[in-house]
Amino acid sequence: MQIAPSRSYLICCAERTGSTLLGNALIGTGIAGRPRSYFNRVAPFNPRMRQILGNANDDEYLEKVTIAAMTPNRVFGAKVHWQHFLHLVAKVEGTFQTPAAAVPAPAPECLEKYFPDLRYIWLVRRNAVARAISHYRVKKTNRWQLDARWVTDDTGGDGEPGFDFDAITAFVRLGEAEDARWRQFFQEHRISPLELNYEDLVRDLEGAVQRVLEFLGIPAENATIPVPNLRKQADDRSREWEERYRRICAEEAGPAAGQDVSLRAQPISE
Image (cartoon, rainbow, N blue to C red; front, side, top):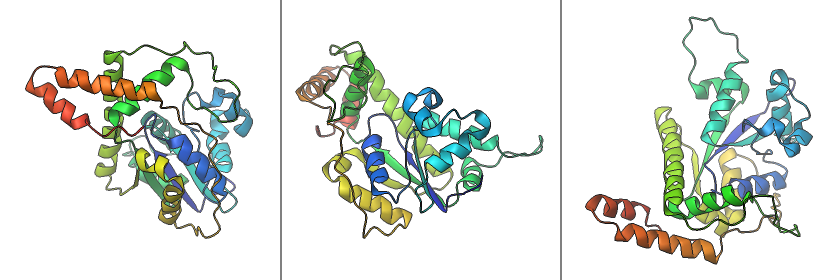
């Protein structure tokens, strides 16, 4: 690699936790890397990503991502869901020649060789039910982000779905499982990430960006945070569904169900 980062970070997250909102804000500062989903397995086939990286093959993909994800002050940033992270680790491991009998280095140590001074930002969403409802709806509509500049919201999806308790529950479990994987990873490797949550992010985006810059050791006196173009997707339907979902949970018989409800009974934030 011709130009290496001087410092690096990963936004570690699950779906519907505000990673695009945070990533766009950090990109907009011009001094905090360009965190995008470079390591989604379908990223090389995404028209926007192909525009950024060109026709990068496996041999040059990491190098092209590193260049694209760095700002002129040599700060590298990327955002990863758990599966994206595993894909990233595999790509980095493939760049190092090690004896067949050698014990593989731990993932953080391996990544540090390629991304110096690597730090982790853990973005979570306290309201697991709201997150699940959002994930369920966007999977059906294919409206993953809504840009305020768009004239239409038609993205070729299936249209608005109906309320489906079992489907929403599946997305609750999916989000919880991803959070658990990140938690275990940080604990196993004794990593202390910067923890941010979605609810605070949407209330105070500028404050969240300032916390990230401070965590990365980047002087923020002259940082300008652009007004976000993303439109909030939660609406009255989201709130009605959350109330309905929690009501059904509360009506379920048995102490186990009651305990489960209490674990997820976060305030309605959207």
